[in-house]
Image (tube, rainbow, N blue to C red; front, side, top):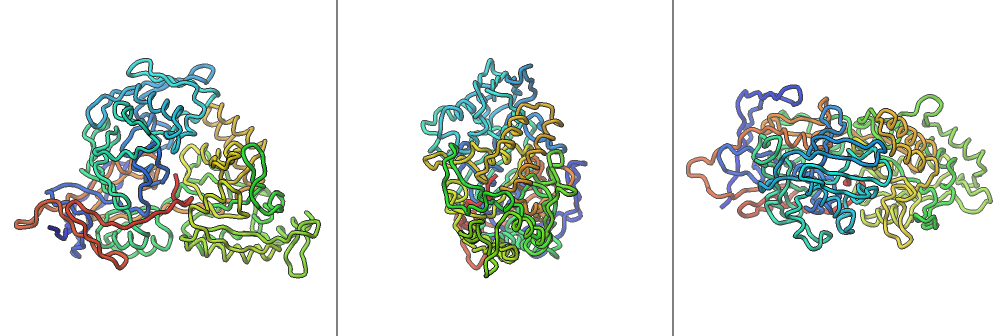
Amino acid sequence: MTRVGVLLAACGLAVSVGLSALSFPAAADDTAPAVAAREPAAAKKIVRLGVTQSMDSMSPFLALRLVSTSIHRWTYGNLTVPDPQTLRPSPDLAESWETSADKLTWTFKVRDAKWSDGQPVTAHDAAWTFNKMMTDDGAKTANGSAVENFETVTATDDRTLVIKTKKPQASMLENPAPIVPRHVWQQVTDVGAFQNETYPVVGSGPYVAVEHRKDAYVKLRANPNYWRGAPKIDELHVIFYENPEAANAGLKRGDIDWIGRLAAAQFEALAGDPAIVQWNTQGRRASYLQLNPGAATADGEAIGDGHPALRDPRVRQAIHHAIDKKTLVEQTQNGLAQVADGSIVPPLYSEFFWRAQGEEQVTFDTAEANRILDEAGYRRGDDGIRTMPDGGRRFEMRFSIHTDTPVEDKLAQFLTGWLKEIGIELTTRRLDSNKFTEETGSTGLYDIAISGWSVNPDPEEVLATHLCSRRPTASGQAGGTESFYCDDEFERLYQEQLSELDRAERAEIIKRMQRRLYTDAPVIALYYPNNLEGYRKDRIAAITPVPLDKGILYGGSGYWPAYTLQAVAAPAVPAGGSGGTGVTVAVVAGAVLVLGAGGFLLLRRRRATADERE
């Protein structure tokens, strides 16, 4: 039996959680929207987060998507977690640590904590996790690069973890690998195939995954054994929607309480609704172009069919000058982004962010772009399109975009016009996500492509995607390259920052790496999209952004926003109301789907674009 849940607000209630959280009065809501997955239990506090991704895996060894890594942050502990104020590493399952004089040995003190099944968390769990990733290819899928430099990992006792590295590793405290319970996972015979769908899932984070329906939802329950104390809500439901428009409609109706990672158009569509707070802050993403610099394997064997002119950094710099980034921000992002006058690390991370200034800054200057190409010997033909210096191959280039991302079509229109003014004929190629990833990361069958990355507080990983070693193997196995870039100076700087444990000194080296990417231009940062979210103030009483000063809610680093959620209690079942756990779901995108007891809105979605990965 199903019923329609009615959303009631507390009249005039203000909730305050101090400087580290948001507080505001709840607003009355007399529209009585249908609520997806409404639990009828009296006073149960539930928050429903709408997302436009579905889980690729419930296994922390296999999951790559942002929604998956977010849920794993909420259900598993790491050695450290970004501090919500500074974003620097702070204690999590490791309560303290020290390094040896030679910078090769790290010793962690593991705190006294419990798994959600009541078993103690020990250093042996962490040692087992890392050793599994070091020795089992199936366990390397998500975070294998995090242990590439590990020589040995041992637990000398229940509380002491010792990691010895092959070379100094300054990013040790940013290790993204969740620690799993040895007593559960050592029973798994094939980690590469195991999807971790035995519920409740045993973890050490603030929540426990208790239910998952593929492409529909994940239900999380507060972990009473969490070492910081249980969250202030009873459950957090993550509900998957087919598209942002459907999720927006769900938020307005009250089917969900919160949605993040909105595009500009969907964000602006929330304006004017008194029940919804629009959350617009700096984001953690960079959107940029990939210019094929001459794709090759990790061994240096040429592959792909990229235009030979793009191997010349002068051509790449000319293209950079031909792009009006301000117009792109205004016309494709509705002004809700920052123009990129730097590289691929967004200004949210002020400690590591680098901005070009003075004569070094590349400005929109068509005349300068044409001057560069003229001096480099690329002459125009009668039709205005340039050719290689020998008069042979014309400057006909492809622009690869995703089939299901409308904003990229608009971006392509602008680029096509601007590049034609400097003698480049651009043709748009629309590829599905799998084909796009294959061509830009493995086979090198592209000229120019759109890309993007969600950057962590320590930007080492996004910078590492431009290393020679990240290019694919000779057999075609992808190595995680983002540009097929291979540059001796960039490699030298990368190794230098790895061994620099002084944070300020390391930050300066990382800025030099960004400068190298900016001037050599294998990638061209276009803009840094704002973090755009919305939530219902009649359902969410308080939430802590990261960083605390107008930071990110969903999709940020760490678990603070999800952990600090406070919600208005759901209403009790009225006398004579239906019992059990039945629910009713509302009309979304023209289709109604009602599931039985415990069911959720089922909206299928399957994508794997650059915008979705962590």
